[in-house]
Image (cartoon, rainbow, N blue to C red; front, side):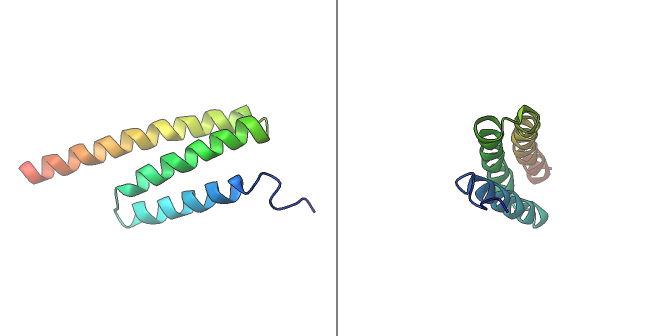
Length: 84
């Protein structure tokens, strides 16, 4: 069995942040987008520097962009509801 800390626990941190972000978004907490973006950065680092998995890095870069978009659209939707 491979050492579970072979990647300096970056993988464990990334998955923990991803799960926590999903929990926050499920509870309609906007901060979940930011936590998800941070986890995407860790996944990108892991994919490029530790696993040489450019597919994982590119996929998580796309998720990072989606999270940034979601964060701003959530703000826009909240503002529109408050002014209506």
